[in-house]
Length: 236
Figure: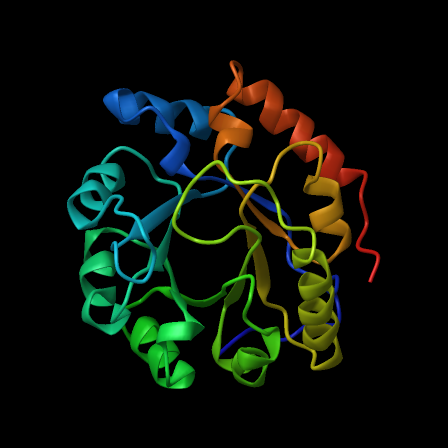
């Protein structure tokens, strides 16, 4: 079950940077992951696409298992796949610390969260841009995180969809109203020039692919993002 706000803690969880390895150089993936870890990444975001739920294919369980061997950072598996219940156990066994499945293919969110928790991982539900957040919010107490997509799932390098900001605000307001201290992750088109907007709207986990891996100096861009986040307060 999601954590509730403590009397001695702030209303929202801490900010976290989550480089998405979909934008990394796969010819030298180990070096890329070590580099963002040294740059101060909080977790590694792992985009899984099946060519069915989304119109593309990406990486899967063997790559996850290989990545687990070279980093101690939490691995955040974003399963953009149909029938995720068939694969969550395999991804957790391969090293995933957090599993996000999409509400659009998850008819029983509490049951899915219970399954993920029983495997020892954090449970998250993803929301596509065209999906209303209220499809997920009634079940928030069962979750550790809600993932808001700010691009259409299936391809890297897309531009940020501004309407995601109002969805973030709605989610964070409702979580605060209910005293629920969940992570709210924003995924898609996050870069230095819009990360403050996402923080102000209520996100605290920031997935960035080309916004980090597309830069020559990962530590410099990560430091700049963190400095921007430190100077930005939620404005709901």
